[in-house]
Image 1 (tube, one colour):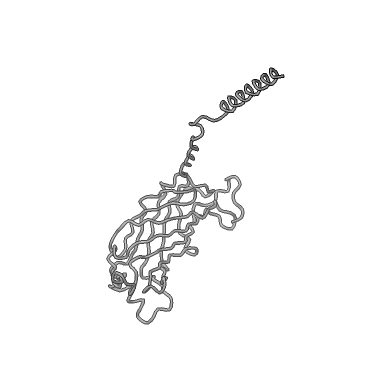
Image 2 (cartoon, one colour):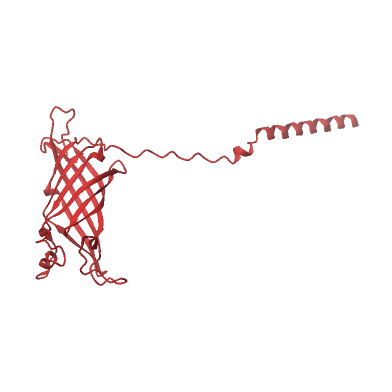
Length: 245
C-alpha cells in the first residue's frame, strides 16, 4: 500500500513539473510584455482640391461677396464696418493649388458703417485714419498658397494699406464649386476667409489704447471675407455636366 502511495506522489510531482514547464514556455518574453504599440503613420498632406470646377481665370461675383472688419471699441464691443466696393481676380488650379493666385483691389472711400454720427465717416476717411484722398487704393496680392487640408489653405500675400506694404496671411476655406449648369452656364467657386493684422504696422495708430487700458480703438483688426467667383464657360461636351446648383 505504501509503495502505491509513493508512486502516486511521484506521478503528481511529475505532472506538476510538466504544468509549470508548459506555462513558462507559453508566457510572453519580457521584451514582448513591454513592447510599445506602433506609432500611427501620419497621413500625407493634401496636394490637390477635389472639385468639378475647372482651372482657369475667375472673376469676383460682387453680388455674392462681402468684406467686413472688426475692431474692439473701448472694450465694450467688436465694432463692425465694411467696404462696399472691391474687386478680385483669381487664377485657380485645383490640381496644383500652390500655383493659384489672387489679386484684390479695395476702394477705401467705399467704407460703410452703421448709423454714423455727423462727420464720423469723413473723419475715418481723413488723415488720422485711412487718409483715402492720399491713398485711394488698398490692395492684396498673394505670394504663397499653402494647402493644409482637402478644403483649407493659408494664403499669404502683400497687403498695401495707407501707403505701407506688409505680409498678411489669410485662413481660407474652399466651400465648393461646379462646372456650371443651364441657368448658370459657367464655373463657380466659393471661399470663406479670415485674417488679422495690426493697423499700427501700416501707420494708422490714432486712438490705440494706452498700455493696460481699453480706452480707444484696438490696434488689432480682424477681417472676414465671403466670396463667390465666376469662371470658365460651361463645356457642354464635358461628361455629366452639372444640371443643378
